[in-house]
Image (cartoon, rainbow, N blue to C red; front, side, top):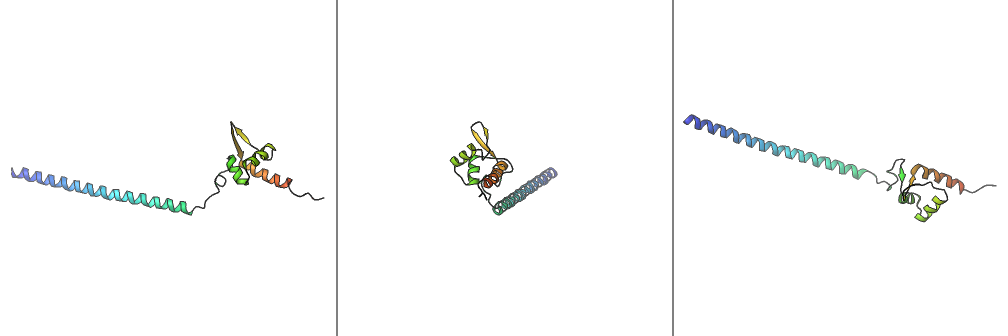
Length: 123
């Protein structure tokens, strides 16, 4: 009977050492993953802090459409002035339901045309 008991003790010892190994491995793996996540978060925060702030709604747009707020902010005019320019045909507008959108390229081009019209005429 002694050999069976001794075999059981060896098996129990191997199971205990395997469980200890697995626990240590999982602890090391968890620490490594946490360190990687922390490092990635620090990198993202560093990149975001180095980016220069953009003008809200204008610099970060491509050649898309602008809202009334963005156009008024870009041109530094009030909403009533924007509406008047739109009614006069100085700034083209696209209406989608009740929403007014302005093509960024067309707005910038209209600025060039307005500045030429308002220029001083030489006789």
